[in-house]
Image (cartoon, rainbow, N blue to C red; front, side, top):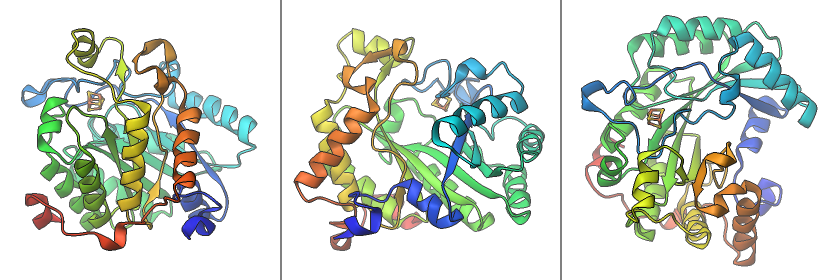
Length: 326
Ligand code: SF4
């Protein structure tokens, strides 16, 4: 039924969300300026997340030695050529972009805002790195008319899974961080990242995550399949036989279940993650091809007449203490 709303897709894609917001297509330009995060600095005894490689999830780490202005020029021109793109959002992707002094981020915003075809910024960060100063900076830029999106790395709403991956923050902190942004920065567009494929993660856990997401004041969600990269703690566990990556079939089933229970008003970034550096992917092999997995999920949804929000109206209350904070 909703397929018509989403140009024939069984889910609400972020591209359509942007098109509705801006009246035209806009493209994210990933850049890499942050150098670290609380985990990598070992704050409060924190450890590097078990899945994270040395690049901190950067899409084009080869550019990170370049000045920000150059990074924007080079990446923007690549994207413009490939997609005939005209308008852009600068995506502060790698590591934690509100961890360094706010004055650093301010300088970076100043550089990015010099480009007349840049409509705004997308800032990747963590729920425990939301200082008053950074929230004020975001407000300053939204008041100037820039689009400002924040993507919070929540990863899971299960406290045990968060401990397992050494995430260094709790699910409750994630919910509180989301509330803080919404209350203090009402013009900020807010999304979260989630991963699927943790040991012992059940279909019920996935449905529960979708229900929690649906109750949160967010506009978008990005889902990733947990994969193993070289030189990570997860690689050691994988090589010792202590971790088995999720199969493509199981991931597909879980991604579909998640979408079926997700509020159809929440836009979805992508349906699968891919290692941007193929030579660093250890497992699973299927994670090498984002497009194949994407198509596999879409085909499965269409063949089984599944679509985003199908089960949403039937949702029951969420469990655990998170409920009190929603
Ligand atoms: S995933 Fe993010 S928070 Fe975790 S170690 Fe990597 S850069 Fe730091």
